[in-house]
Structure formats: structure tokens, C-alpha cells
Length: 389
Length: 139
Ligand SMILES: [Zn+2]
Image 1: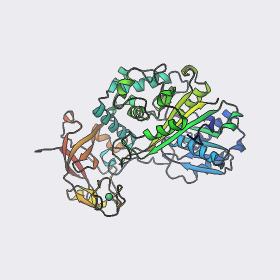
Image 2: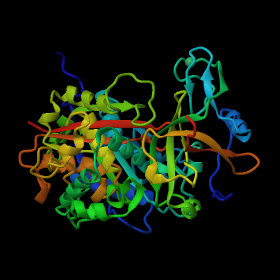
Image 3: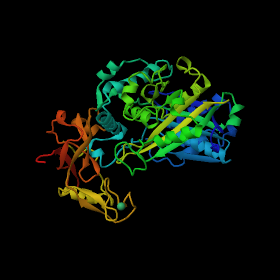
Image 4: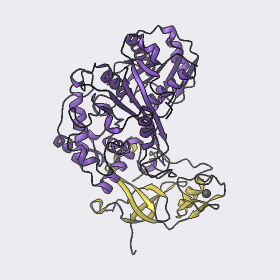
């Protein structure tokens, strides 16, 4: 079998986060620039070498033509390629994949991929997320969609509230070992069951945090990354899937759960299987999404995710240490850049008290699209990261 | 009850036929003359076969609860007065699924996935009438 041209040829060379949490007074632009500066310093790449700039479309800022070029200008760059991208929460990994393609095609040498988010932007009316066939009933945003997903899972597979609680509790325990996490106080499954309903069957502790902040990742060829300051984090596999759905069936291409194709592509490229994964960093806007991903990506059998999770499988020391940084649920909603950053830390052996010994294969996912639309349109992006050897 | 402050649909060329029908107490779905596919939300091109021979055709208004949620913390201030309120996704007997609410008289403790329901209507203003659902009678 011929080797995929993107397998093991490119690397995540540098990474940076801005301050994050409830941060008042700093704009989307400010967070983005702060993160980019940190990423450049992290790997020590000469700024002039960065000739590609990909930026995630600011979610609640409305129309922002040329946003990527504007970010580049603020960084003093005149890139050969600049593009604002949008797949919702699947964007950061999507940008990394696009960067690798640019580099592979000889159209860029080093690409910075970044985002920033200010939830209370001044002078801008946040846009209402949803469909005109759902909003009038008060079904608004991703949270109601995820409530329906949980209801369907409970109906079809008998998953229970405490099983969802175990996911949230495990990630919080991990966050307690992450000094920069937004929420660090551990809670039990019983605490989860006492937390109030937000959108029943979802409780407060099933839902991600609201986070202001930014993140940036610098992608180069593996060869270039080897000469920079940090150990190279190798992109071994990558995949995407768009359009399949959990609730409203789209035209069915196959019977696999939505998102399965994105994992299959990444594992196939990397030449690994789900059971080879040492650390999973799954996009976790809400606990039912994690339930869904664990099955779709091949970590648990159809309809058996809840009981498997309840064995403590996702905890450090468990079968599949998952979201070792705390995830969107406890570290903060950094749009998935927190997941990528944690994957890089695990590969670089810099994850501190939550380091997974000898982690060799790290699987990172993004999820987005427009789950709040009718019908929900979903995007999945995946990466397999490995050590350089 | 709904008030004028709540976000309401703005009918477009693609959707006005749907809202025209609900105003007259009828439920219609986009129906493809080429492949017989019935779908919501409305569009003028069939997502199955890309035919433009799509028109609004009436359906029975009967279906089953596919999913339901109870919103305790609304994402929009106009819905605070309703909370806690339910939202259902109903799978119509003819196939398409749609959002709605079970009427306030509904005993939510008796609701489960699969519950037979039928459409009813709530007039919001002269332009918009929203389909709602109630437990089916005389099945
Ligand atoms: Zn058709």
C-alpha cells in the first residue's frame, strides 16, 4: 500500500494560548494576537518565515471580510496565503489540515492557525443561533440540540444521568491537575445529579464553560520543525466528515454513526487502530457529544458507551484517558485549541501531573458546523498526533 | 404564552407557502413530484434528486414524539416567562420531522418518545401562526 503523502510529513511546531476564562475588556483581536505571539515564542520561529495565516471566523462578530489578512497585518506579516475559515468548533483542526496541504503543495512554508473569542463584544449584537423553524419555540443554539441528542441516546440505549455525570466528573478531576483550567474543584457523580437542569435532560455540569480567550498553532514541515525550539509533534493522520447528523437524518451514505468516517480516515492514514490510542482529546461541548464520539470513533461498541464509561474508562489510569486537560467542560471553551494544545503537551512530555506515561498516539477531534440549524449540519475533524522518531 | 417580543420567522420565497398554510390551519411539507420525497424545512430544490418540481402538499398533522426537552434556562430573554417549557421534535406519519411544543395542558410526566400526537395551531399575529402539538385522540 502506498504511503499517504501527508502521513508524518508535517508537524505542529509551536503553540500558544492567550489568557482565558472570564476576561473583560480584551477583544477578539487582542486575544488572537496574544496567542499568536505566544506560539511564535514557543517554537522560536523567525517571524518572517511565517508565510501563511489561517484564522477562524469570529463566531459572534458578524460579517468580517478579510479577517485573516487583518490579523496578519497586526502581526507584521505579508503572507503568501491568508484565509478566514469556518466549520464552527471543527475549524482549528480543519485549519491545521489546510495548512499541511498548503505546505505539501509548496504554497507555504510555515502557517499560523489562530482564533480569538470575546463573548461580550462591545457594540455588537450577538447573533441568534438557530433555525426559523425551531427558534420560535425557544429551541435555540447548540444546547437544545444536545438535549435532544441525550434524549435519543437515553431512549435508544438506556444511558443514565449518572453515566453522563461520570464523563463530566472525570474531566473535572483531570482539570484539577491543570493549573490554567477555568474550573478545578473536583465533583462527584452525585454532585452532578444534584446540579440543576438547564435543558432537561442536560444538567448544568453536562454543559461546557463560557470562555473568552484565544489560541494559535504553527504548522511547518517536520524537517523544519526539527530545527526549532520544541520537540516536533508529528501529524500522522487527518480526517474530516461533514453533513451527517444525529437527529434529523440527512441522505444516508452509510449506516455508520455520524463522524465515523472522520476517524476512519485519520486512523487509516496513520496506520493505527482505536485501541492504539494512548490519549483521546474529544470535542466536548456537552456530555452526550462525548457519548456519541466514543461510539462513532470506534472506542466502544454500539449502544454500550454508557456502561463502559461508568467503569472509569475515561479517567487517567483508565482504559482510554480522555480530555486530560479538562476539556471544554472544565478547562474552558477554547474552540478545541485547548485540545490540540494538550495533545502537543502529552507528546512533548510537558503535561505535568496529568502526563500519560509513554503516550505515543494522541487522537484529537473537533466538532462543529451548525448543530443548531434545522436540519442540524455537523462537521467533524480529526488528527492523529505522534512523537518524532 | 408567546408575545411579540419573541423572535418570529421572516417568511421568504422558500418558506412563505408553509406559513401561508399554517395561517389557514393546514400543515404542509415540501413534496417532490419527481421522486416523491417529502421534507422539511422547506426548499425549492429536492435534496434527494435535485429536481425543481417541488411544491407544498398537505399532510395529516399526525405523528409521534421523536424527542422532547424541557428548557429551564432559556438562551433568549423573551422565553424567560415561559420557563420551564417543552420543545418536541415530532416525526410526522409522512416522514419529515419538525420542531414544535406540546400545548401547556400536556402532562409532561406522561410524555415519552413514541407518544402519538396531532397538530394544533397558535396564532401569534396576522402573519404567523405556529404549529403546536397535543396528545392524539381517537387513534
Ligand atoms: Zn426528489
